[in-house]
Length: 239
Image (cartoon, rainbow, N blue to C red):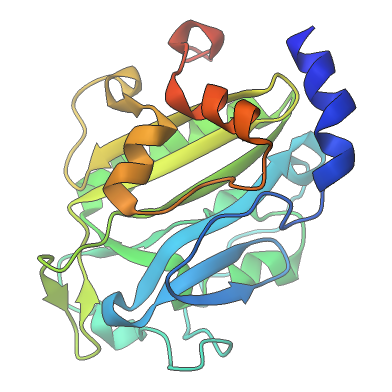
């Protein structure tokens, strides 16, 4: 009944366009073919990247392009490849290349530096990669909307000539529109040793950490219910 109520009353109002679910933003709003972002010049990265994923979008077979480059849409100029060289940090995707296989254009855009954030190799290639894989698993039989980035603040260390901030923590929010449920994660930028369930947070908690109001154009009573709690048992963590 809850899922039926959602489809009957909410989806006709907000639709399924790429930018259906809106987040407040403090930076420069940029839209690419498969994802949008809010770019914060002082940190030379996005405060959030938003995109959707479903079984159809997962069917793509486009291979990684690895053509890392500055984002031409950023008016102030995005971070550069040279900012990461010899820094000890990976150019960590926010919208993963593995979620952008639907076309060569989408794959290529995923390598804009505006979609990157400094991540320790043990984190990027370990726990963060594991979470990205889990999100794809959830999308196989549903349609999910994802918002993700590093948690930005004034005390962060920086790398490169552009002054790219190094987040201490990264968050990821997943909204399953088929089952009308949300879950959030906050993970430290280091080797992940615990199970992913250990990093689950409510969306309300993530909003306090980031200062961002996520999915604000949902009806208030639905937003309040979805963002204030999470039922881990309603999500499958074992593939």
